[in-house]
Image (cartoon, rainbow, N blue to C red; front, side, top):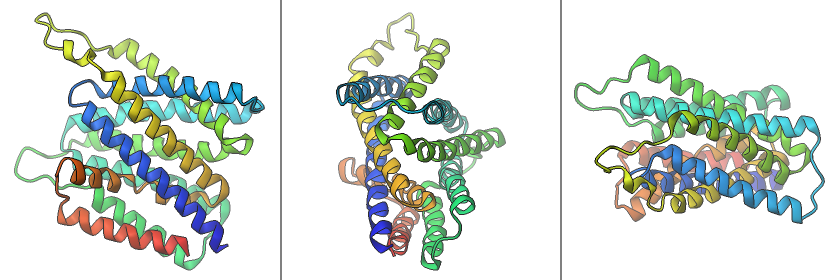
Length: 291
């Protein structure tokens, strides 16, 4: 039991690390090009790689149910991502990001508790600490006036968090038929969703040509973010496939902490005292979940 929990936590930490790296790369790229364009290019590039691996590896095709579970997860996850970006653009980001992050973890945790029963008491404590850690890490309170978060932004953030959480559940279910095909069919759904969105939100160049720079090398950072995101999906899906869903989802959802660490190491952006406390609580949560 200890070995199973420890391996699931290790895989979840690997997912959190690469998801955090993906968000960091995407955030850097979004300073130059639209985040939607970067995400779509990463989805499309990694889909080609996954299809090649599954084809040349002669992996058996998934059953229809597992294929649709994963594809729906990829599709609704891409829609949730766009909704999340829109929510962040509407007002102060801190409360919206914290609510989204918390629901991303809570939805699969509650589903796991319902479908798999209660874990050991130490794990329950670890899950509770994980929720506190996610809130502290992601929630940066606004200072001064004019930074209130609109109720619509909170509603959209909650919907996107529930969508991300549902995606994690669907990945777990789809992995019954093979992890790599689960990732591939999820990417198929994600690419379809991104393609449909881009038809209505394609970046347009201004008359003075000031937006020409968005087309300069956006795909490089997009591919980097896409590879890291796919690696995170692999780590999480393996963690959920080999262990408890609630444990895998909680550990993987600590990824904002790794984004903050990368910003501190590379961009010299110091985390706040609140975020530092959250990362300390996250470490305690991981220890308890490992036991």
